[in-house]
Length: 405
Image 1 (cartoon, rainbow, N blue to C red):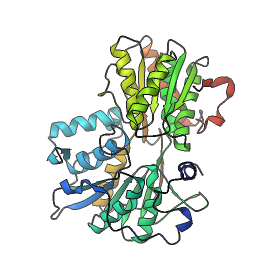
Image 2: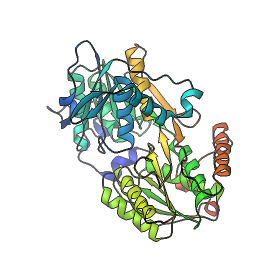
Image 3: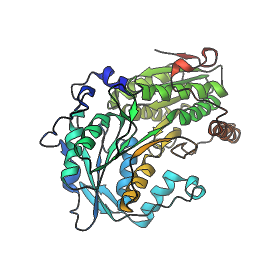
Image 4: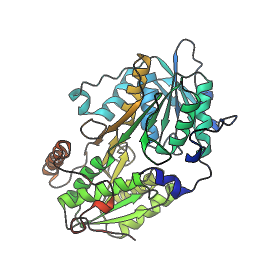
């Protein structure tokens, strides 16, 4: 039921297919919203792979950009620049792979090389664009359609039923029945992440880093997905600093940079010195707020989400919860190219390498001991000794102090 509540919360007339229409998906609208595919080089003999982005779009420095990295740079060997594609140099490709995968690359023997495919990327400006964009990919002859973001679940379901011979990858959501239960379609692979595990670790890091005893959490919409981030983070803080307080503030959106910055500034005025930003584009605003405070000499830090945002604020970013969306996309494309892609459901966490935390590049007192503690906690989560809560209601009140503005 965890993602079904999103539709009820938003009450969006924009969603292309409500659950009562599952057995007979509506016909696809005639045309899509905003294809970037106009800039895509024409495919001759190359295999075309399509991607529909969520509302944050290209340049979100997070979830969408991670998917684009996996499809464009890694699988295709190109980068999007100036409204079109240019070849990526071997040095650029190696840099992005190493930056994303780090030590896991060697430890897990991850091989990432271009696959000779052509990317077709479509941007969605509103939720009603999702389904026609997916249908456009089918009409353009892609062999695999990638859908990035939990809000595309309805659209993927309808498109997959309408096009049983087309293969789909849905990242960040299962398919849900009319009763809100996960189910499968033979031509769809779904991938979800156990984000709470990574959030626990960065929460533990925040607890070990804070000097004021107050850390902040910036969430986007108050939906089950983001509540998992909150729960894991608060549990991690409590594990290493049970006396610390987590100050919580939700922006109510994922696309408002200015609002995110305002919320970040507000948390800093409340004496928080570590802020965890889990709010999409709003989170970028919170990162900017901490960056500006840091530039003014204040000893404050920010923790990002989905991708490592260190390049945005190298003096302020402490770490990030990283979803390996780029690797998930790349591996799916590789399997499709090799004729091995199959439907099914995947859940990825620390054990599978689908979730991790970004390298801690900044120095602070006790850093060596703190990192050792994180690795201990990570091992306990993987072994099952630590069960990370997935909702704030599961937190132990005595060990999870929090406050809301």
